Amino acid sequence: MGTVGGFAGGAGGGVAGDVAKGQACLFGGLGVCVTVRPEGLAVNHGMSYYGVHWQTLLPYAVGLAGAALFTHRALRTAAARTPYPAHLRGMAGWFVALLAGIVLTPYTLGGAVDWAHRGLGAALFALQLLLAGRLVAWAHGDAVGVAFFLLQLGGGVLAAVYVLQTEGLLIHGEATFQLGFALVLARTLPLIAPPIAAPPIAAPAAAPGSAAAVSAQ
Image 1 (cartoon, rainbow, N blue to C red):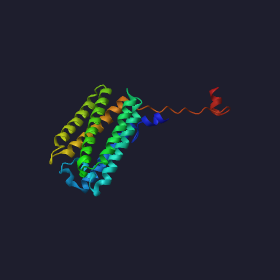
Image 2: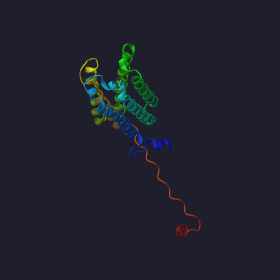
Image 3: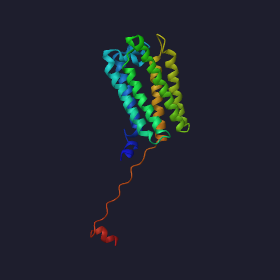
């Protein structure tokens, strides 16, 4: 029952449902943050800007936590039916750990904490690129998956260009990168680990002496 339930499709269910929930958390939280402090779109501190202001800390943290947990569950659910289950489970664990590290190292503390924050962010981006590339390869180079991966890569390049600058489009690059990553997961995971249909429910046997049993004789 656990396997069938984990892979079964349906509205809001299964691997694709968890990916969608994770992104709803991420972009929902980001939307609240931008509404409260729209200047974050221009200060070029990326999404992390919203983790250092008390007005936006809660939606920022909740959004990232939801994205981490639902994405982690989607990857672990699909892992058993991929070529390297342990590898995918390990990457899912690192995904959560790196996101948690980013939240817990606000860049405004400066010095080593700021550089730790940057290092964790770079490691997360590298992990997501590696994971997305691996999933696209396991999906035999699915054309749509490749297109989504290129979208993710483009967002990563945009973010990398602006990450050390005082002005620019860092948050826009990050958002594009995360959207591309989510689309890769939503596209490739069902191809690699397709949903398992629940077995049909057998009709109950007719009781001896019943009308159905008599007519069958």
